Image (cartoon, rainbow, N blue to C red):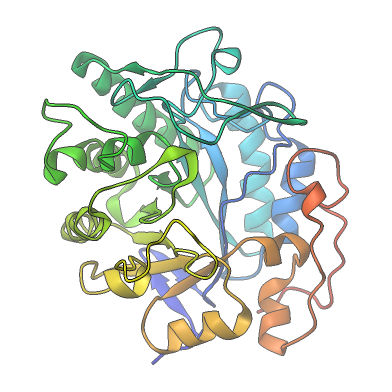
Length: 367
């Protein structure tokens, strides 16, 4: 079997290794949600020849913000800001995808010009909250259930965001179908109680996410589109009565459409009280038979555990978050088995260059 440092064809891209920067919300888009030169520096630091970066979750429409100071991609100013990012990454020989994001019910009127957040059903998330300031989270309000007539415009917002991402120079896009945001809200029955063509059966609940992916693919090509899912993540009040069936169906449907890759957030089984003892685990390894394309796994991997999962065939790519934050040259460090910088959790969200672009490198990132 191939290893973590072996090449991989990802659609039209030729990756030199399988260590991927996970999409990480950092809350440093202070000026009207526009990417800044500091963000360009951050991504360039983490680019390596033939490596893949997935840019942080980026809002596709004005009514889609879950937090302050997160980037967007629906204005000319946003596109121009992102162009500086992609140019900096490509100058280092790297590839970069943009993760497309709509918070749906996981939002707040203060973030969306006083509007009521929307979702598949009028169900208030039981936990989580919107970030209105950097001192903590504010509980999500009761959302408004979307009318069927409104859904087409939301799908088009994703398609337009893909056009904008393409204009900004991204190599592809990833649809954020995880962590309790809009496509995930439609997919899981704990958030979706609709009785029309977008609710009820698993086929209907998956329809919105599939139509979003298809709309993005019509712009940029299905081989340049990925989707991220979190089958057993309860963040933002999410739940499903049968996650194994729900996400296996989604994976099979995406496989049949030729999705560029499926990105699976692994369940945190150890210490996770939300998983009942004996409950079926839905992770990349379990979805391998349902999805025949490139499979990416994320969620607390180390160098050794990532290597092991790739070598056993449980995933093709491993996305790293916290380790990549603190180690901009992570692929090179992993390949040479060098010591890692510790990360500073206090600087993850918001702030300036500290904990963002000031982590030292051990070697030039040439993995």
